[in-house]
Image (spheres, rainbow, N blue to C red):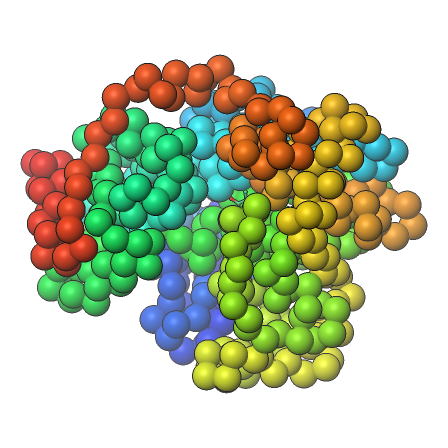
Length: 475
Ligand SMILES: *Cc1c(COP(=O)(O)O)cnc(C)c1O
């Protein structure tokens, strides 16, 4: 199971109407053709003895062994090990995802030691390397295009910079991202990276990306692809840190529980996958800000869309959580037609009808929690007063959730720390009077030269800039 037998792993769509693919095919495809999301045809499991055998491994080695069953024979194990080592070598902490104790029975796991100081790096650093490997084997290239209002763009760029088989072009709305966010994207000097500042809003940028994908000849010529959060490989690459935390706290011989600041439901879904693989995870707390569709669903089976309102935890300002469909598919007994029907009604009516039995299955494991901005600032302040620890607004919501819904039977609770506090200096100052400094490896961010193009909100102009980047690197 752990690295020796490379079994073939097949993936099916949650809507049941797309071709079955292997891991490499799912990595490159992203979304399935029927609009569904890919999931493993069956869940790999490890025995308690297998899990015990993974205790104490360095993070990169553990990651290779936990991810391997999902990759199957798509990538040789030695190559996967090398990619994992390389992916996590640049992190700012030797443990990669260290646990910090905050109270009796309460820990936080820091997932923000990657190059962009947010947990997206944990998966994307490995994804960029997997893309290169799979594309090299196929003799192919792709062009990743995306739009960002700030955070996800920099994590995607850091993941792809310098990759041999990938070009990446990220659009951001000119003058509408924070300076830190812009500089994290525009100071990465690599020939395969292009940043475009668009004269428009984030929605304009997203519309331009959609228009590029809809332009079939352009899409085919440029081999357009995406690394958004519905890509199965991102979920798979997030499972190892749950395993690392659980093993460190005594699993498989002792239960553990997690509280996860959630937006698109990708991070907490990875925790559920870890549970499905055999780790004794007693409870998963889904933590939200005032954009609380997941909390309302888990409390009262109310899956209804409301307006998104901005908060101090912007990466959780989401009302339609794209990865929820994977859980829905499981709760509906893996019935693709029923899943497609529920999603169609959700889109049409803004409310998802979920049978009571399915909701009960979800709410037996997942518990919802909601905290508004005032509560978030109060939690940051309380935690700092009690322990000296500085938690960013996303993490603070997770910690408050862990305190409000402690694990049953006194099991240890781990709150996931999804961003470094230095990414949100204004909120931190408001709560504590302190502005956390950037880690030393990023301290010169304001001195680094920036490279980006500027473009009007015009499809032809953007496509011309994408083509220049791709042709420059095609030679
Ligand atoms: C992306 C992100 C989240 C939400 O994670 P999902 O996988 O979308 O639920 C939470 N916190 C931070 C800081 C993030 O960047």
